Image (cartoon, rainbow, N blue to C red; front, side, top):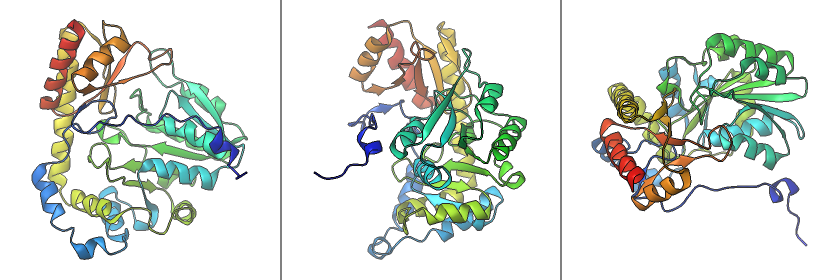
Length: 351
């Protein structure tokens, strides 16, 4: 009989829904419309047969991203999406049986990776008003902890951390010999970033992704930012050609268009504000925290409403835990995208 890693064998996985192409996608915090078509067309012209036959080189992208965030290339590691960075960080900086402390609920891949790698997940529950219990989180960090992982702002509920909260967590993690992992997948949708902590502390890693605002979810491009020593260890854990050349090319070209980035941010803010106001005018309870998503408490029973929306080609996200079971999470985009969603949502509520 062949061997199967028992952690993999016993891991419970729920994979993303298939058949999403052509649907109105408000379920996975993608940009519902994507990048401007003329920009995509211009980059595609660079993808020649020779380009496709050459192994990818991440350094040109990393040089541009370093300038973009005010760092040096030695502070960066490109990864196949930020979820692979999570995996590599856990493999590199935690032990079998070591504790990974997170808030809960949070991005599923933290506890999934704990399960696959034989780490012990220590969840700290969000408060009833969706706020992060920073004091309880600090208390949960002990000598048994290898990694403290926070999302700034949090996913699924978009509460962020102040810079002082980040400093307290980094200090407590360092005292316990742990890494503070700051996942900033949604940092463009709030005011404060914790990126500066990578210069203040030697145990902080910040993750960024090109899947959300930058609309490259299909290409899988992420960046880990830290001090050169931690980045050296992290790079040793990655494959020789971790990120594909098409992703790196699109990442470079996006960074060369700061006006487009600002327009993406503006359109996202405008669309979210419109959705919140439109739903509240109709009497709905809405939680519009940081992030490109909102939580809405519908009047119709959740499973029935999701089924009706799905019938209309609209995908949304629901949760089974007690804190969020009465809400839908709605990914936000431009005003046009949100007008389309609101129209279908109200029809589905009445159907």
